[in-house]
Length: 605
Picture 1 (tube, rainbow, N blue to C red):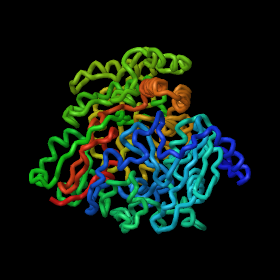
Picture 2 (tube, rainbow, N blue to C red):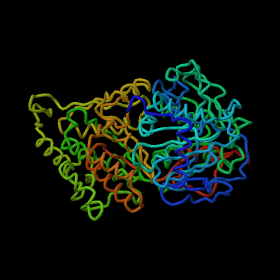
Picture 3 (cartoon, one colour):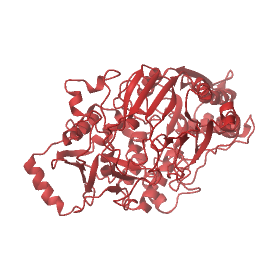
Picture 4 (cartoon, rainbow, N blue to C red):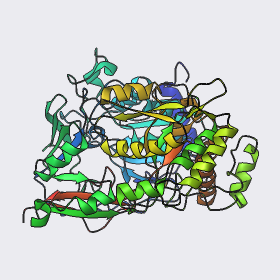
């Protein structure tokens, strides 16, 4: 990253540049922007299609988190903040519709303009936009937010900042951001940065804030009360500036959102059964079918709702840290996949009700196709032939077990690969050529009982290969610190992926994240093929080229054997108090952060 990554131009230069570029820019000030094509909703839309514009206001919803928190600033690397905060209390210039692959509509900004090649984007703020303390949102706040988050904020904001050439004020309420790279998605990402109040942080350390200095936002909800590590309560601001916007109509209906913290999932579930929580997402299909017959469900006080979706499966499972031996060898990673008896484990954990993730973008048109690469996908992969792993060009599928507990065939295949990689059984233990045993640690959060059970089953198969597995459970703070420093051999992994993947792919598996502490490239992918395909994906201009490029990327990631995939969440499952309701119309992304609790409402019988 350059030492100075933002450059402010003078007013004279800015004015001259605007006159030149205006010739090539749209004369209109559109209400939205889509990654490809035009926004689906017209300028005069009444509400988002999956919101109920007549939903009543009032009531509250209580959620449960495991672990604790030591910060209420979700925008910095330091500390652990409740993950919900950055979605509930803060806003950006544009808001996303979850019924389109990637389309934004005006939120803090009333309009957006871009160059034809999207080398710059210009936003005009709404005159009525306000922070929760009633002060107006200014262009100065916008520029300060981009600069501060880009240099001092959480790593999730810094990759975008390095691609900004300049950010300048172009009018009383307008700001233009120019980019230094050929990436059409940047114009959309620019609209999704949270906007914070500059004046709050005068003479204060933004990175050191914890519980004593909660960032002021523009969102409908404000932290009204908290007990460190135990509870956080947010209340809807009665003076919220955007309550009459079409984008907000029928959303943010609850008066109060509360989060209760529990030591583990078992205690949290018991609290829900006892009525202390009013909504709970369930990710285990077998548990959904067998453990939700408690009295409140039988009485009808708790409703079980299933929310369909059309998004990719993403990747959920156990990630191997390729920065360390022995997982730096793809043959070892393939052996670990062979030893993971998915069919038996899935039957044990979910009753076999949840299908397996077969690739990063499975369950969508972006997924790698069966068999050898062909057509455009083959053309995209061939330049990287010398670095691709087996299966990328000629086809690959995850190992399938025989359904028995012993899974003998796959274990024999795993042992053959381990032998090829230099491992032999000596005195009942698998050892390398120097006699060092094959032993590794699985790092888990305290209270993660489900994944611990999976690893315990898995470790029995590994023991038959002579591999010793150690399970370490640590609290949230220790877990975050070790993950940031990549101090693990194997740990749990979850990456949700969208129908319009973009710059976040660099953060997930770009080679720049291999050595940088705190990146989300947990597996340590350092592949020129991955980097090149991400760059190609970001520069595509047609949906056809985009789909082919993502399919090629999916092949490279899947054949990298970085993660042991488990089951996909093919439907959202939410158990909730009967007074909580949601619209009949489902967005294509299903249950995401902007669905529950955003478009739900409270209504007595």
